[in-house]
Image 1: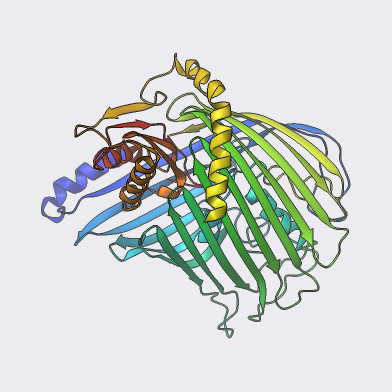
Image 2 (image 1 turned 90 degrees about the vertical axis):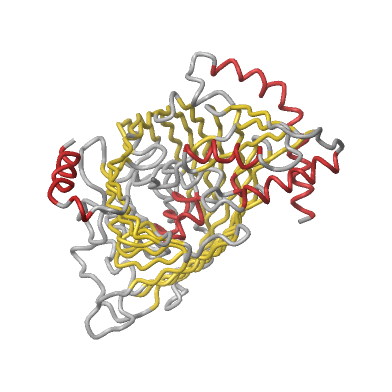
Length: 381
Length: 128
């Protein structure tokens, strides 16, 4: 309401300056539920001890809670200037989501972008959820949800590659990139291309801390296909024991590469998905050389009720003893257009040093099997 | 493409097998607001539709081509089936306004006599 009166004041003071349509929207989601998990650990370290079963109030059963402001201004010729500020927060504690620096949070950790859209496509500059995540979500029946999906499987790869889970700077691919410039072409017969480049801003090192990625997508005739390439330099410079051990200085070394191919097919109420991915440290593939494969099956009973399931397999190509299988199934029921309730169960069998989680941000004991169940509520505003 | 055709057939068989249980679910939504739950239906004016499996397949293709042209809607997330001019839309869109838009586009395709819309909104990760 404050915003409205402010806008009114602007209108009164500058009546002639307002020709173009513009709008600002305040929006968000709260998602919270009760979680049971049969094992737990304090960290993602491969040697972490099993601290036993846990019951907790958990944020983000479907996706994290977040809030944001977005707006656009029509500048004529079918072109718009857009902005988005969006941050995740934890409903159980009120804390903001993680930043790129270990242990630090950021108010707008998901999006802080300004950009333009029009017949040329869309362009966004700033911190954002990168195209590779949407490419995976579009080809996963579980939709990259926070509980047992391609997202938790991909995070499992990151944990296997030495991600301590205390920052969003990942060793394999990325969920968020800071400093990102992302251009997406318009759809052409269902096909589109997204290109990302993130300058690193490292003094004296042009390649230092840079990221580049490309996503080719096809979406028509009930079929989604995604192919993605991601490459990062100097990613995840923080060792597992950071800050005791210092961060690795940026030198422009390419140390994060991720390839992914996925498909999702929708027919009648059914959806089927499959994918395959390779994750490597191109500078040292003896340290990180991993594989991920998935399969999914879902059924939409009616517009209010659906069941989705997924199977996710991780494999360490350097050490055959390290592998992980996860199965998750979830039911979602829409109480209204803005509120849904959900119930989901998951099982993961981690072998060796694998620590694939069932739900985002909640470590399981490495090398053993774990069950989890969650019921919760998700409300949009 | 052959693999997908076979897959489609297998899923269609499964769907027929499951259809009795799927129909009975309709009762679940009785107490809920119709705007968000009930599958909306629209009858399109026009001449009598051609019949037969070949015509069904051609019509399904035409509806996909029409929806695929929309800038916002991803036709890859939508399962379209056609039977004697009656078109059913299953699957997801990313915004509530696209549900109605899909009905309008499908209804405008020549040969479509009615549209049953079972689409739901699925927000992408971090999505607005």
